[in-house]
Structures are given as C-alpha cells and as structure tokens.
Amino acid sequence: MDRRFQTALHLVGDGRHADAAALLREAIDRRPDFTAACLALASVYIESGQAPEAVNLLRAAARRGLSDPKLQERLGAALLASGEPTRAAAALEPLSGDGASVDTLNTLAVVYAEMGARDRSRVLFGRALAKAPRAASIWNNLGLLELAARRMPQAAQAFERAVDADPAFAPAWAALGAAHVNSDPARAISAWKRVVELSPADYDTLFNLGMLLWQSGRRDEARPYLQHFVGAAPPSRYSTDIADIRRMLAGEGGDRSSR
Image (cartoon, rainbow, N blue to C red; front, side, top):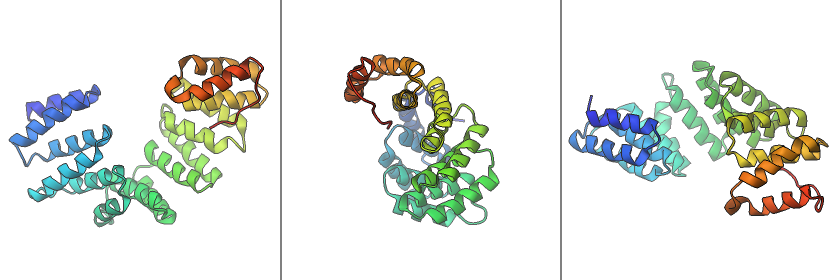
C-alpha cells in the first residue's frame, strides 16, 4: 500500500485534515486509478466542510474511467453535503436496488428526508436497519426524520434505539431530550444530563438543560449548569443568553424558554 496513503489515514485519525488531504492528492497524482485514495480524500473534503471539492474530485475520477460503485455512493454523499439533494438522489438511486449497501440506503434516505419525501425516506431507513439493526447513526437519522415530522413518540423510540446501540452517541441523547421535552420533562432532563457529560462543549444543550431544570422548579439543581454556561459559553455566539442568565440568577429577570 502507498506510504502516503497510510500516513494520510493516520493524519485523518488525528484530525489533521489539511495534511491528510495534501498527501492523498500526491498519492492520486502518482496513481490516478487509486480508488481508495480518491474515496479517502473525498471523505476528508466532506468532513472538513469542502464538499464541493469532493464533488469535483469524484467527477474527475469518473472521467478517468474509475467506476467503483463506492465512488458513486460517495458522490451522492458529497452532493448532499453540498446542498444539492436532487443531484444526490440522481447519483444514488441507481445504486439503491436489492443489493444496495447500508451506506447508500442511509444516505439516500437522508436525501429524501431533505426533499420532503418522508414516506420514501422511512422505507429506505427500514431497509438499512434491516441490514444493520445496531447502527446508531441510522436510528438517529430516522429519529430526526420523525422529529421534523412532529411524530414525537416515533422519534423518541428511534433515538432510544440509537443510544441503546451506542450509549456514547451524544447527538442522539440531545435529540432524545428534544423529543421528550414537552411530554416528559424529567426524561428530557435525564437525556440532556447525559449529553453534558459526554460533550461538555455542547452549549446549546447545556443551556436547555439549565433552563428546563429552572422552569421545572428544580432551581438549586439548575444553578450549577447555568453558572457553567455563563462561564464557559463563547460570548461571540451566546452574549445575549449569557446576559439574560446572569440577570435571571441575580433575581432580576423572568424565565427564558429553552432552545
């Protein structure tokens, strides 16, 4: 295996996306038919917010004659991340037959959800989960679909499956709290406490947890979370919330709603 490719994979694992991308580009320049390097570089671009670069890379690979279905699958993901769900659907639908991969089914289901085709999305999530019943990210995606559709019991059930499959999956715990916040605040509080443990820099959830505790009459319990939010949340984004909470804790203001 190409030394540059191996090094690049280690760099990706360390979060050094720019350095990894440079090495992967070198590997592809040396071997234009290096499919694994093309896939890895496309993923690096998507993860680092450069999805259009991934689209260009994968289309160039197709023009060079590379025809691995995984390249087309990754193109669909890149188009989705680029905000082009219609083109993403066109890329993925030919791959969505009986032998479709879990990744294709999941990505196309997300595409359909973004396009408002919720029933088609549910069918594909169901197919993906039949192949990978412990895939936390897919359960989470299904939950987000149901949350957007305001089907809270179904959303909560999907998020419960996600956190059962991966108890350290903070986004699913956060969404589980959102699904319960109006119907069962105690369960929302429990879920959001888990998020704060797993992801201390999730200031939106920290704010929501503190405010829900406060509004539920559990003010002594709320105070440490709110004080932590005031001290840790970046003022560049949360200046208004920080000021409001300071006034509230000082007894000068009323309650605020959670996000």
